[in-house]
Length: 428
Ligand code: PMP
Image (tube, rainbow, N blue to C red; front, side, top):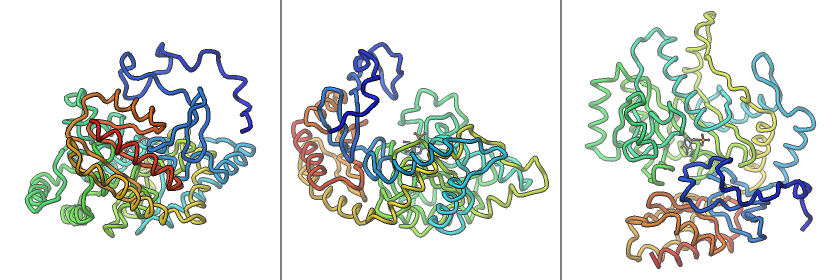
């Protein structure tokens, strides 16, 4: 393989930076396994500095849906880089942003037509929450400052997003007393829970701006699945009590659950939807908060005070929009949803042996998401290291071992991933 040109410029000793110059995510850096130094990616492979190759089971936090280094995305970004890497969106506009917004509007169900771009999933959630709060203010309705959010939910790491995530057993528990308090309730997945949520809205609906949910899959909260009927119930409740419904499809959007968007499986159109992760095919950070006409109309006014006062410096970055447009081309040109179906079948079969193993609580698959939920995991660091020894990159969290591969993964690579899980879970 040809050497890449950047290799000669690599800093001496970079592979052993244990000093904390690079502050690592979600890690007690003193005790966590040292990070794996990566020099190259391609397809579903991660190439380490020492020459080892790992089959990637996570697609870089669920972003790289076409595999790494897809030539079509690379060429689009290179072309855009030569022309114009970035301009601010305040007062200016560029074609890649307009094209992307039009394409998203055309793909999304209903009249989700108005796209506010930002640079990460968490920020797109902040924008959604702010949009929902201001929607009511702009309509002259006072006091709607609360959200309904769900146990097991996760919407990001910024403070507004943390406040609508499950702080009771989620990763933000430390901050529980410091954040604005919202209504954290059970998903209405039974008649009893539906009645409880109906009761809450009947009593407190006048304080509530909206309901926020990850449709079909609660990702970072434990890869928990729910039925599309839950989303139908939420839509019905939002309509009954006149509150906004926000779907966070940052994880589920772009094919991951088997349909382009999870909301399609419930035939439900939310008032606001957030998208990120696979939006650019895992190339450049980009996110979108997309609103229906009803929401947008509350901001469209002769009154400047009704404008949405938000505008990240890198919103609608032209390189990111070019990557996203190229990623959407690939969904059209290549049989991504069929690939997801094939992956689902292979995950079912490949992970099935875990069902009988002691210590395994559940095995479940939806689209290109395969989950082995353990009763408990005693030593997460040791478990993660064992996967690397098997030449795979799989990153269990909590009591969950999961796969979210690229949709382009080869059958034998996926087999390597499921076999590694079966082999290691058997010994736990
Ligand atoms: N919402 C959901 C459903 C997510 O899974 C994530 C990221 N794991 C986020 C929001 C936050 O996105 P980001 O990490 O890009 O800020």
